[in-house]
Length: 288
Image (spheres, rainbow, N blue to C red):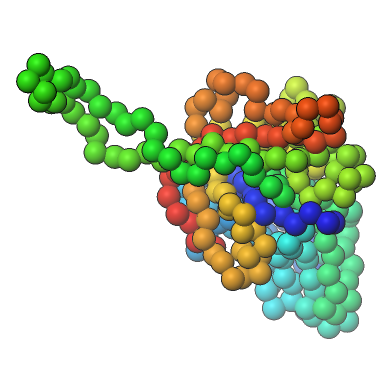
């Protein structure tokens, strides 16, 4: 894939029931291992997350812990895929026993069988993640209108009430996204497709959070309302490589749904690529 990933928008999601994974490795087996129900976010979440809506657990680390980190690792790659590696001796096999979890990880190929230190990458990027090669235009963080009630007197004196808060807003366009998964493949693109499978265009939130991959920008548009999300702005590869650990916590602003026109042509007359524009309010700073 020739286009490096720079940007990731990851949304928080809720697993209402525990998920299962089954391993057979040098510890024996088959052994059922359990991922607890709770709130999760993929990659852009704190390693110490407690599993609540505003303090979600990081999905990949939680799965790795459930499998046993001395025998299996579950990591994000610079290509935006979830890589599962077997660290034990002999041959290890892993079956992700809960379909929702398999979809969230982008692993849809059934049982994974690996030799010592061998890896398997997901067939798709993880769902509930929006990846992009480029973001243009991007307003950066700017102040949004504050809450103020008051008046100016004829003398020039201004009196009133202000809540004493600063609100930071950012409008950013994830650009050059492939229109569909098929075009992503044929173009060698790295971004998340703008449109989901045809069967899900009008009902993208059905099955939340276990929708079949590939994920799309319109899936994000349909499912991220009112949820804490996280964004990295151009340094995705540095986060994967460990030279950076910071990201922004955000919520999609209400006008994300009232304005319309979020998905648009990237270049006039060129149908294969799309842009997806987000309006976000900054909720804080996050650290991996």
